[in-house]
Length: 183
Image (cartoon, rainbow, N blue to C red; front, side):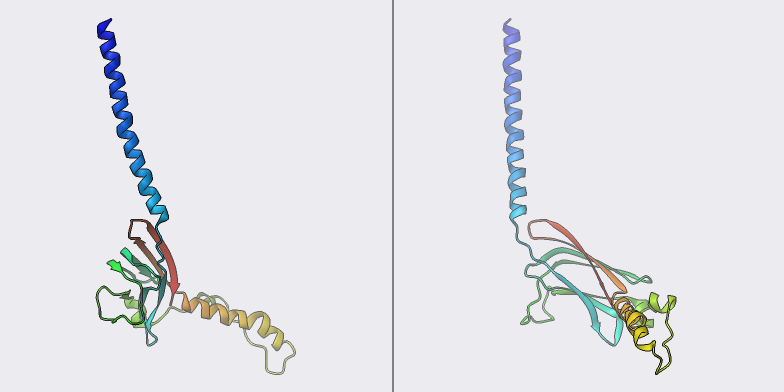
């Protein structure tokens, strides 16, 4: 009977120790999760051409309020894929020196696009409506129904031929991903 009592006390003690260890671990995990949930991290991205003369040289800039950490961008235009990484990308400030490190942007070059320009748009390849002759009574209606939407779709596609996927983490460790299109 004494041995049974000793075994029962040891099992109860072991269970109590395990409960305390797991309880502390769960409280720490909950506290870490609460801190992460309360974190304010405002990072916004802007992508565009570096200059209008070269369609293949582009940038991604942090135009938010907070620094992005462990940043990785993957840019693709259907011909080339470029990957760039940075330890941190601070937010853009108008009074910052553009040559200072770390920079508020990542720039990259898509070689095919730099050499040959943007691809023809899908709308140009598929359908190009013929404008009715000047003075035709259908010309105005045709412009409203077909020509203007066609021109708008071409302009939209020319601007959005490059896809950029940005992945970053906040200061406390929350990971985020955003996909932008630009041209």
